[in-house]
Image (tube, rainbow, N blue to C red; front, side, top):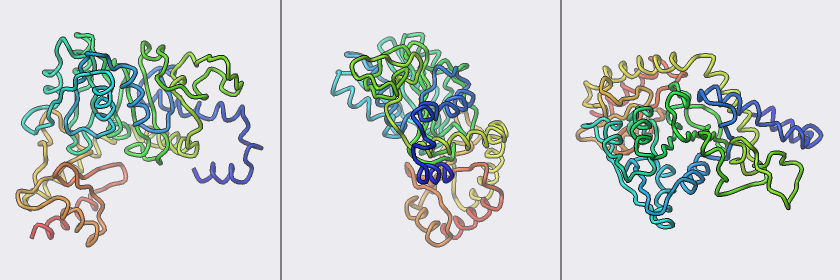
Length: 346
């Protein structure tokens, strides 16, 4: 990213010609197609996940239709459907992410003949609850509902497969588990949606954007039609590199690494009164996001103490301490966290 920025700052369009800019995202689209096990024609590079989720909601919402959502999901997943409720009269129904029930089962049970869209995060940002996307898609498609999945908290930590899931669309930010910077996100659409006219069209969405023909709209024949305008190309360069690095490690290996650390975490923190939102061996538990709860201690206060007194960065989300475990973490991190949480508990 630094190399890209320095190059553009020093040389500008001498090196970033129109032709170069037209091709600048090609490598990232190819990397994303491999990452998501999806056809290249289905991949678009956009400025943010919220942009893509908003486009998809407008595109798929129906007057009198019904959208099924998770009540504690990240707001960028749910807000577009609240707007659809106001704009189109779309009915919004909610399922709860409860430790007493597998979230996959809650979603499947919530789908009925009137459901027209199901939109959710494959891994819930606050609790780490994991959804069996393929199972939800199968049930949704039985009633003709479309499925839009945010994989921001999954891609980069676990395998993702558009091909095996058969979801209608996937959306993913670049700056979470894919470990790059803000300003770039990925959108993957199934063929039926790929052929639709996007609700919002930008100059970069045409087949040959640098022809600059303002009187004729010739949209790209692939998912590039969802791309709007110039984005943070330096972030795109960083995302291409991070996908390559993570893919070299292998997502099965990353999943296994997080699982081992999660078990170390539980063994070390349970004696201090901390328990996970969802048992690690329960259906629907991811291991790279572990939400720890305490019967008497408030998560925001503990999170602040961990940061200020021990320089340990965790999040306070949904009433728990969210611990995110990635490739760069090791057992020493777990030991330091457990020791600090033990002191906070006392």
